[in-house]
Image 1 (tube, rainbow, N blue to C red):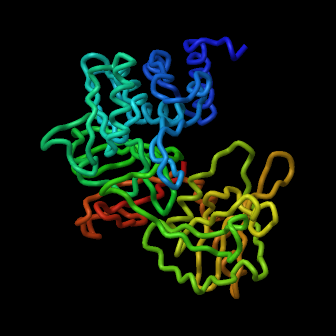
Image 2 (cartoon, rainbow, N blue to C red):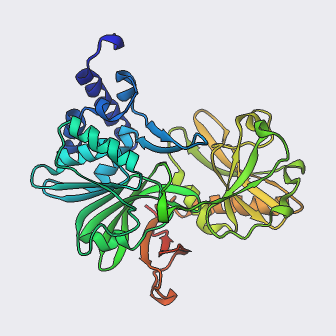
Length: 409
């Protein structure tokens, strides 16, 4: 019975769940990471959560702000294991963790062993205090815990073989590549056009070049690296019917032009492009973000979905774009025969048909390109256009990002 399982038994069951999830995602769970998961007592890092909750494969929130928004958490174990695999850390590595909770630092400590070192940094003294105490309680007294803003270098000249960021970041501050040893890996949940992906970036002669990515979600960065997007409401109804757009970059959208947009007839365009159940297509989101003008994410309350005001596959952020007084968004895929679903585009506005066709056309182009995997490179903010590789350029405060779509897989 669940009620009689010990912490060791619950931990073993959790590792099996993580391994199964990795397999479903097409990932391998490295043996050294599995050993770490079996060794670290997660319940010592999860605050007031009961023993069984501590060993669920979900995030546990450890701090909220005055509005109830999560500000710190112990991330879902499968996600931590995935990022450790991305970082390819090994015995003897020097590792910096940005964003503390204690548990992930303990996992890293197990992997790097006695010849390696682990430093964890967080801007919140309450978080670092709790992390330090939890690490001590679990016996990891040699993990360095620092309370500071990770936007800046810990100390001049200090280098790490890997930096793992466990908070959502909108930018890549210069301190991170400057602290990476040549060939070192930066694993960071980076937001581009509102879409968060855990990118593994390798340091190569002043440039960070991606070696893979996975979809993820994290609490937002605080301090100098904090970034706040813009919300545009699309309905003048109460919160039960909330529908809106989320803008995360410098999109040029006039909210007044969208007044009453959802009250106009909806045009539907279906693409003939299909996907089987269980097949991930999150790279399509990034494709649309880099090929459509005035890209945004459309969000909606569950009641707005239930009542058919909008039809979204993901209510917390579905790809959309604004073309003057027109709004188009990716439709909830419709079922065809068996477990096959077709992509489509919905649009409202005076030229809704044209906008829906444009979005549908990009879905078709993505399919014709072989459903490619994006590549990301990160360049200093002063890099001239002529020195950037081909691709979609996204300018941040500290860096110039280039998202490219190489030959289809």
